[in-house]
Image (tube, rainbow, N blue to C red):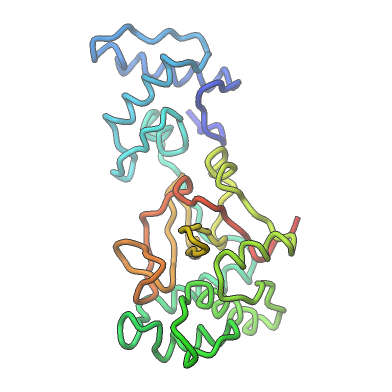
Length: 266
């Protein structure tokens, strides 16, 4: 079975997809193997189907061996696990500028602050200056500055204007992308249709009290994101980290603010 292109969950009107899900769950003896009544194949995604999907998710892993999100919704990863189909990884294939930005970010993986925890260092200072701040004048979180530097360098290499708004603030950048009419995907839209999230987009997290964190999406596999982030750590993905890391633990549903493409406008 081919994934229908958007998640299938409670209230879904895609009767063909719901029928297929119910038939496959029945074939796998879910939930009857747990002593419950067999699922009725009626094309309606109601509470019984949602419960059966959650039971399947609790008992299964994705094709890549990851635990499935226990949400009762059949998204790309649950679909692949249910039907044994591989979920395609989407890598950079957009504009030359996006490919250049990703390549520039990859080239910086491994950069560390000097000393660690200082928000300083030769490369870090360059990132901070790119966004218009003087690193000698304070201790600045630099996740946005790192991405602006990547855009500046990639734009210069292609002799094109840098379309990314110049700022060092996460929430300020999110606001400016809206004012500039740049293409954005909200948290709700990303959950409803993960295929809207593409390589080269930025993810935005609101961490509370006026702070946030932002990173670059390098590739997408279903709802799983491979990202490159500045001012973070390899393990926790903190907004106050020590360097530039490539991470593979973020999911579209965990991005609570949204995504934005600096190269596309509505």
